Image (cartoon, one colour):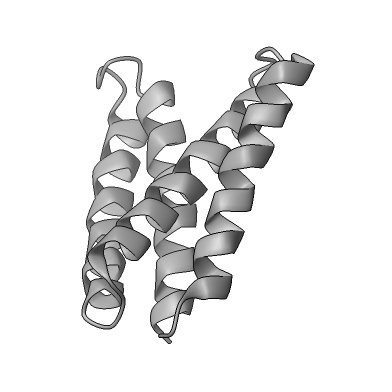
Length: 106
């Protein structure tokens, strides 16, 4: 259950980061509200997961999911660079997330 909560928390981090970008510096009401609602839920799920998972694992996986997911949103939706070196770096982050999950005893 903790890993599921952590996965959802990471995906919601992608959502709030995207909403923050769309809020245009918190000048647009809808995306601004979405940012804060998604942040609260994401932090709540992260907090729940941290009750059962080590701090380093939970926080690193959460930020890794958010980083990779946000970069993919940027590439796929916002037409940001998909330079091969950038994609390799994202793959390395993903490999780290998978490695932490596979070596976790929780």
